[in-house]
Image 1 (cartoon, helix red, strand yellow):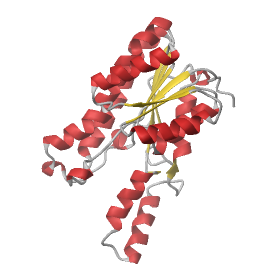
Image 2 (cartoon, helix red, strand yellow):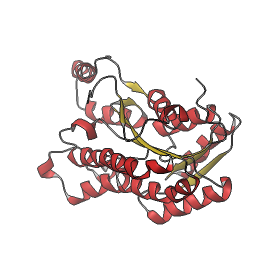
Image 3 (spheres, helix red, strand yellow):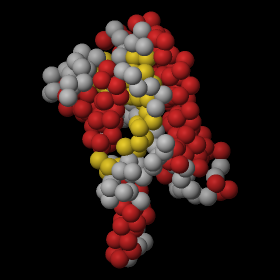
Image 4 (tube, one colour):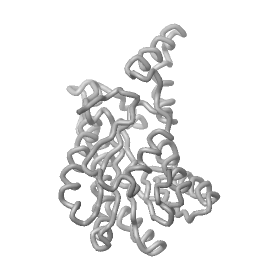
Length: 269
């Protein structure tokens, strides 16, 4: 299907690897010019080079989406380079600060730093990026905003209360914003993921299995799959294609919605 994305300009946050990287390349395949954002500039530049091979323009920008100044400077660079932003995909996210020795834990054991860590990127990062691109979208009466949610934010996950709350906040945010900016021909939607095969999931599984016997490791993976009616984990391309669809005019009459691309883990009416 032609998604009519040729020469559109898309910012994808947190796109140095994983779902973000695949989303950048999927949009590039559809003819969109892409902005690869990541806190790691080397990773962003590598993805931008991959995207350029598909015949489009690509710009790598280092920015921490939790830092409003960083975000404003990033959007200024994009406007100077391309003159517009048609699509914003708020993909950047994080759950617990493993570098600081934090792990998923019961709510009563969480501290403010756990909440700040999840909220700063997952929620405030979405606010910062969206606010930075909206004035131009409103002026041109055109825009597509797609937020990477999580089924944790739709049905909740034990031992992940701060992350679930941050992601749940995005769901309500996009509903309210969709009603506010729909008059300007701006669509605001979300794609909700379950467990997806990424570098971060590999790390998570490895940490869980470190002290397990081989039978227990197998049992853990089987238990994970049993949560999904389709009996498989998602792949980054599954989420990327959904983001590309919602970024296109093929989905022009869809707004304020959250699409779960999670193998049936969450079936929310």
